[in-house]
Image 1 (cartoon, one colour):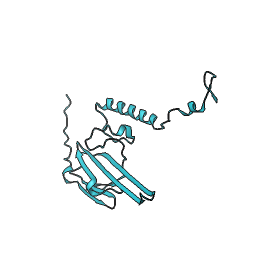
Image 2 (spheres, helix red, strand yellow):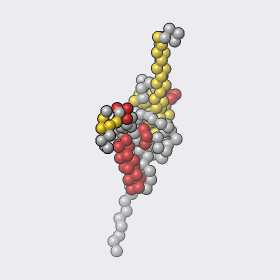
Image 3 (cartoon, rainbow, N blue to C red):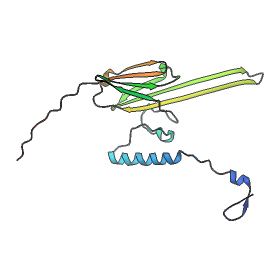
Image 4 (cartoon, rainbow, N blue to C red):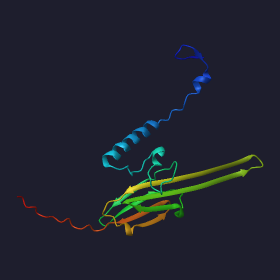
Amino acid sequence: MVPNRNDQPTTNKEVCSMARYDPFEELRKVEEQMDRLFGTFFGEPSRRFSALPAIASRTGSELAPMGEFSAPAIEVLEDAGKYTIKVDLPGVDKKDIHVKVQDNVLAISAETKAETEKGDKKSGNYYCERYYGRYYREIPLGSNVDEEHIDAKHENGVLTLELPKKALPEAASKEIAIK
């Protein structure tokens, strides 16, 4: 027996029926508040990727999967003529990867499925495991990326994207007469 606030004894069952604490709930609330703050400041909702699944499904992109997904690890390299982005997508087939550019945002989505069965159902010595994973990542592009000539290759679980730079026109300057 455990005393409660009214100094009335309670049973252990009543104590154990408490709600489970979610350590990420506070982070989701802070993230939601920050999204609202920046959305108000910039006049539109944030298009950035969210790492928390409850918020992440609200990105608004038709490529964004519903429910939980993971953000794949990326590596971005820059040289004089192009950007190279390497995306880790372990266990994902080439046919299950989708890359799209819209409104200067590169969206990468992918999914993987696997099933393992061992043993014999009749003998009772049977093991079955299923895995399903989804990846999604949005990467904002600069105005100097040539979206028409992006090249993508997939090899050994790594998607490599080459984004060539386009020549930007020289900024014209004009002297303003002071009156």
